[in-house]
Amino acid sequence: MAVEHPVTAPAGDQTRIHNIGYRSYDGPRLGRAYARRSLYSQSLRGAYGLGRSVKSKVLPMLLFVVMCVPAAIMVAVAVATKAHELPVDYTRYAIIMQAVISLYVASQAPQSVSRDLRFKTVPLYFSRPIETSDYVLAKFAALASALFVLTAAPLLVLYIGALLAKLDFADQTEGFAQGLVSVALLSLLFAGLGLVIASVTPRRGFGIAAVIAVLTISYGAVSTLQAIADAQNSAGSIPWIGLFSPVTLIDGVQSAFLGATSAFPGGIGPSNGEGAVYVLVVLGLIAASYGLLMRRYRRVGL
Image (cartoon, rainbow, N blue to C red; front, side, top):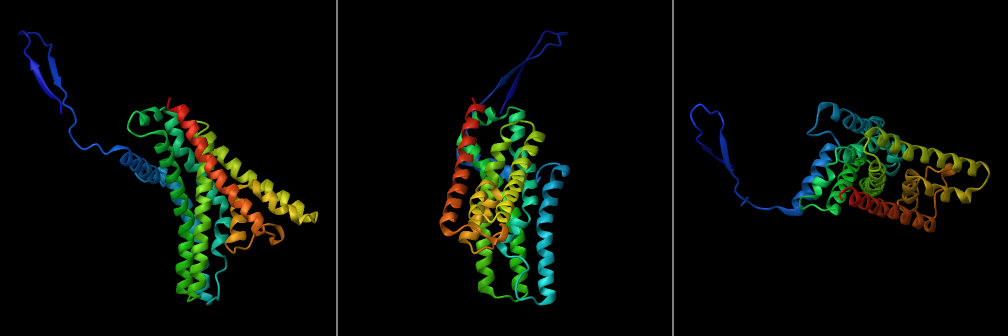
């Protein structure tokens, strides 16, 4: 706490000299772990506009509602018609809603990192006990958590609705668990790719456009090539083409190992051997995204 000691000046002189005595801080030093948790929680809150202006809340909250409304409608239909199963499998829901998920990533990944780059505040983070790995891990985990909330919430709506419709408890619980595994992988993959792309430019608009281009154009191109391969009776190449889009990667993993129905043309998903390649590619992209972010912020923090 600063204590002022004014020094008396001659009469008629308005000049004043202040002796500001600074005392050292004697309180607890919470260290890196606390700083990392704080950065994670603030970044997660920011992904939904919490603690920010009303304008910042509109888009993420709107996308969250858009993700959940179709699930609520499906549940209402299943309950009203006393259906014996849900209209959509848990593992299929995120694939159907991938455009909404991509838009969310495109809007929130730049928000998470672009302002720090634009205003050159990253070196200030690293002037404290926090290190590059803490910053990258907190940002990565926060966006992945926000995506998991976005994608898991409608699955929870479907699950609760299925139980209210008195569908088989064991089947629904198994499907719900498989869906959670699928969206967890999707959240990690999309968060990593989105942050890597957004960290290239400090301009948020460019970051949004780049993320949308990578996620949507790659999916459109892969789907087109798969359709052409199916029309040319080259069914064996369809699973390998799916390796070149984040959405089809997740589709391939869940159809190979989580009992999901593939969205590939003709419903031809990868075999278990091909699915193992899909898993390795997904995990490799997640690890590569983290590594690229580390390299990027080591340079920025210098």
